[in-house]
Amino acid sequence: MTIDKTAVIDQKAELDSSVTVGPYAVIGAGVRIGTGTEIQAHSVIKGPTTIGENNVIGSFSTLGGDPQDLGYQGEPTELHIGHHNTIREYVSIHRGTVHGNGKTVIGDHNLFMVSTHVAHDCIVGNHVIMANVATLAGHVEVGDRASISGLVAIHQFCRIGTFSYIGGVSGISLDVPPYVIVAGTRNRMRISGINKVGLRRNGFDRKTIGRLDSVFRIIYRSPNLLLKDAIEKAKQDVEGCEPVDCMVKFFEESKRGVVRATEI
Image (tube, rainbow, N blue to C red):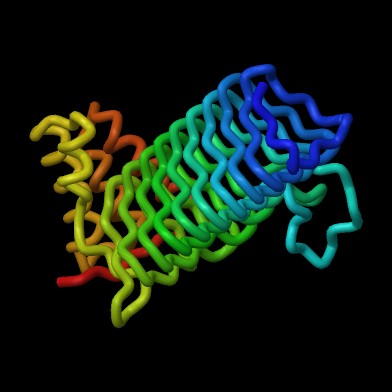
């Protein structure tokens, strides 16, 4: 274990012998840090927080802070961070609340760029990218391999679907379906189409992308159909495709409503 002499580590913190801790870092009671994780200078980690293996925690980041919730009364809620995440400078990730999940959960292989924020009770999957100053409000769920660009603000309780891409400076207040591109330049939350480039990069074949595009056209390019009727038509027209089933299920399970405005 390599710990700078200026670091402050509570006796009730548990660090693997391979953990590296930089200058002036502060690690509180109830923090557990796994094999190979690097804690850089001036970062602050409060407990109860569990951090897995081979993560990089950037300078001036704050992990496991109290939730920014007026109902929070000091309960011992949690933050769980998985393995192989890169958390850059000035990132803040807060613990959960007792009236939420009781914990905030971060998966594996994620990249949180400078000054990103993950609020209480969020659930972030695997291989997610959050660019500079992107923000998740409380109770947001982000699916695997979603990409959230810079200065994006996502409203509490929203769901962001797997393989979706959100363009910069977007305000998101409804659920974003899997596999689509959302941009919010002049108008908030306008979907421009299927995220074909991202899907190709992740090994989706042309036939599957074509099926997803067909479902997109049924749901988003059928002005004479109600959403429930468009979903039923999508089920009938494109069967036996797991990504399509995922997309349809996302619509059916939405509680906030799903983005339907499009760029023509």
